[in-house]
Image 1 (cartoon, helix red, strand yellow):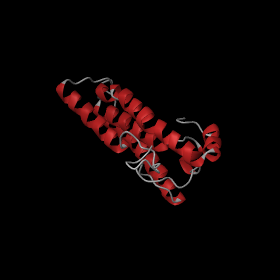
Image 2 (cartoon, rainbow, N blue to C red):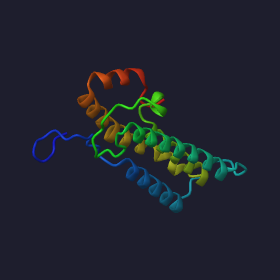
Image 3 (tube, rainbow, N blue to C red):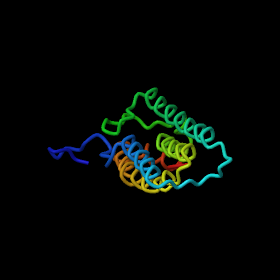
Length: 160
C-alpha cells in the first residue's frame, strides 16, 4: 500500500482494526439477541461456565500470541511495521493465533449468552478478518520478507 506521497507504506494497510471488528460483532450480536433472542443450547447445559472456559481459552491464546510478538521485538498493531517473521510459540502451529483467539472468544460469548446471533455473526466477522485483514497482511509480509515469509507460509497453516 502507498501513503499519500506515493511511498510504499511499511504496514499491512488492513481495512479494519481487528479488535474494533471484534467489539462491533459482540455489540451487534448482543443487541440482536436483546431484540429477538435466538437461544440454541439445551436449558440444562451450564452455558455460562462452558462459555467462560472457551472465552478464556481464546483470551489465553491471544495473550500468548501477542507476548510472543513482543518477545520477538515486533509489533502487534497492524499500523506499525513488522520487523521479523515470528515462528515461535503459537506461531509454530498457525499463522494467525490472535484471530483464532478472537474467534474462540466470540464462540465463548455465544455459548455463555446462549446467543445464536453471535454464532451467525461469526461468518461476517470471519470474512472481514480473512479478506480485509489477513489477505492484506499476507501480501505485505510477502513484499517485505519475500522468500523467508513464503517458506514460513508453506510450513505453517493459515488457521489450524
